[in-house]
Length: 177
Image 1: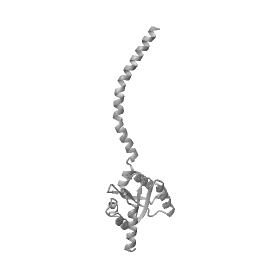
Image 2: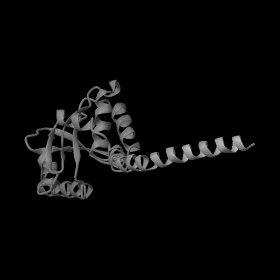
Image 3: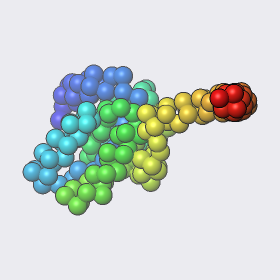
Image 4: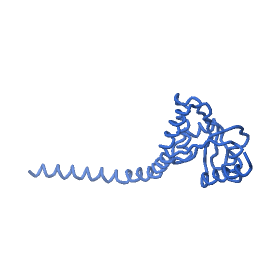
């Protein structure tokens, strides 16, 4: 491949990955054409992109970006996965597909998160984290929990006193009849 063609491919890849901060590397070598099409359609339904690229071209395209550490020390051909809601959602989908017997050759090879390279084991570890939505619900629960407890403690004695006054007035009303 001539240098001109390599530069064109690198520029195209650079434009596709523009704005991408987190991505994962996977291995799709060994999948049949039908399995690859099913894999791509499953990923596409979750708004996840999959692109098979030669590592040297990917290194050239991502030089100076936050994705560059992902390609350090890799050889051969890899597939880049990016998209989804966040890196945790992406890692969960990749881990789910790694465990799927329909895609036996599909393996996680690593990735990059916040500019730091991830190993295959770290990708699986990230997949066990709570998603962004789950993290927000946990945070909201922690923020609202003490306030709800305080409100219950403030209302509780007043409610008990009101109940006793009501019982007392009902008892006096019964005596008057």
